[in-house]
Image (tube, rainbow, N blue to C red; front, side):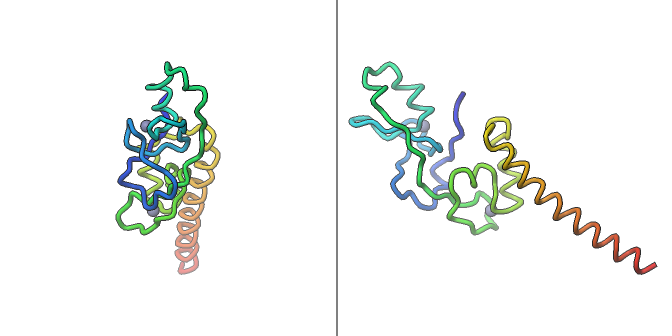
Amino acid sequence: MKGLIIPAEFVANWNNAKPCHYCKGICEKMYKNTGFEPMCRPCAEENVKDNPDYLKGTDFVTDARFKCLAKACNATGLVFKEFVIGSCCYKAFLKATEEYPTTKIEKDVYRVLTVAKGFFNASIGRQQDTLGKMLQQK
Ligand SMILES: [Zn+2]
Ligand SMILES: [Zn+2]
């Protein structure tokens, strides 16, 4: 399974991260090995698995920060998970569910549902307010 990869254009702050040599993006889990180009874990599995030094490499969670893919949103400090679940705004959430289907984020499904529930409840709350006001006016 190919992991979730965020294209470099959405990186707001690289911190210690470097783009993957192969896909040019950032994966939550990056792979590090002395003498190897920087690369993400999925690309490492795809490209250097046959290298005798492959097993000497280690995984680390990227510390890059991402900016929201919605132009109207000015979130720039998103960690990987926040970006792929679109936690900063509704637009990002909708886009994230298209581009990063929830089935691929097994561990985060619960969080996605929690975020979705939050938006849903907020919208139901507004509808109930409106309904309540309409009823009061009668
Ligand atoms: Zn890669
Ligand atoms: Zn956003």
